[in-house]
Amino acid sequence: MKQCMLWGDLSSDRASEQYPEEPVCTGCIKDEEARGEDSRIVSVGDLVTDPEAVCALCDCGFDD
Image (cartoon, rainbow, N blue to C red; front, side, top):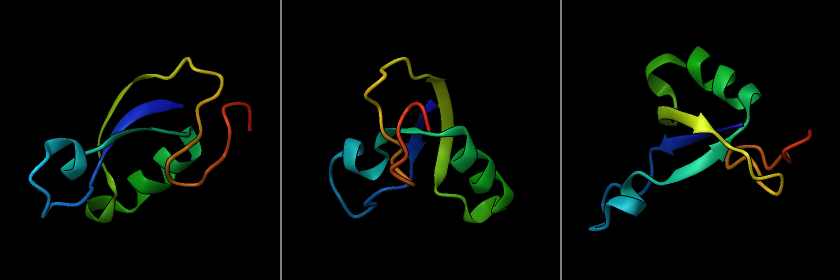
């Protein structure tokens, strides 16, 4: 699971809402990369080490 910047609410005045950073599982990262320019991921960041983390796109847990 990696910390990813996602497309959010672009009409918001807050950058944290326009491009939220959320944990995303490797399966969803691969699926989103296959979507090309329709991907919901802006950028992929560092590895998530929190065992309580949940994927923002599919709600799977860290160990799933």
